[in-house]
Length: 182
Image (tube, rainbow, N blue to C red; front, side):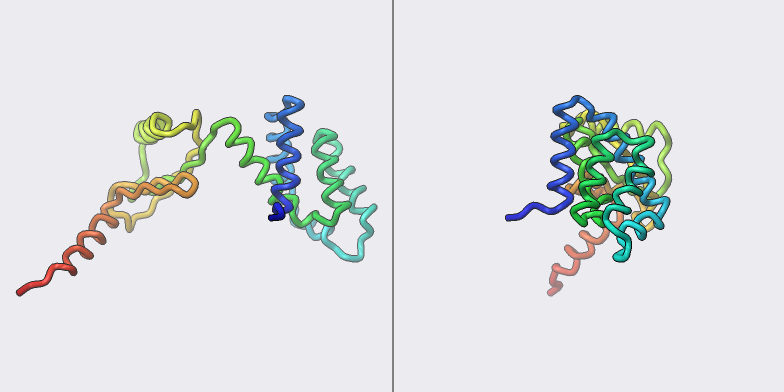
């Protein structure tokens, strides 16, 4: 089975970063490049414009990113443009960021609660997650979802722990509907 474009290029960049002990610096550069593309949508439009020559697009990459990005990062971007993969640059760099987080055992958790959490509550959640997972650190994302009524929903990757009052009420309602009265 063929690998996705972002996985092919992202894995290559990751392996290069590990072999050259530049994981942290390339991770920071990847974040900066993604941010540059997201903030400057015109850059993406320019790179995807069919009437602009490939050499000119490569020169734009060299001029824009060559100033602050390493030769490895700039080289990756130029290769992707030369292979007509410029529309996959952001996906590739996000895939690379995900690989780096896995490598450094940094998890990403999404926590939804009915009311905002205090700093003490947040630190207790992080401590509990660190104690019950293989991760050594977490990037935490907190949201307030009032329909939960109480409790919380924690999502890490494809795992979900739902201890919300809303879910418990829904489960109770299902159980009550199953009961047949004589």
